[in-house]
Length: 155
Image 1 (tube, rainbow, N blue to C red):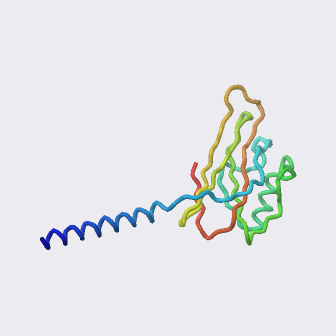
Image 2: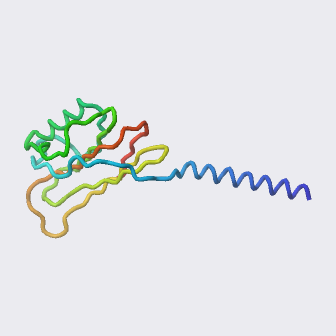
Image 3: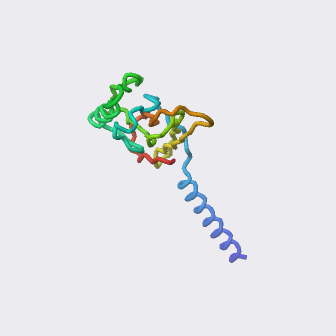
């Protein structure tokens, strides 16, 4: 009888430990608050020199460099909701798609976080049907609260 009790308690302990470990690895995802700074298209046919990329900006110099690069052909930063960022409180997330041969392409992002990381899910959309023939390059720029968590992008 003692043998069955010891085996039962051991199994209960093992299952309980495994359950706790799974809970730690599957940390609860919660939506992270973000503020949209700009969403749109560059129209320089790639002359801005920006490749398809996901970028994290955490300082004023990199932010100013990105704005200058985006403004190479057209002054797109005039349409940003803000250009002065307090980098002691915020981090910039900038997502660029490749240059497209037609209009109608766009980017949306969802940002969530766990106790282990901040996850940025990137959603690219393409036009259905006829699109304009202008060369475009979609972008999406947002700011999030500064955190020590690593930022992970998922396309």
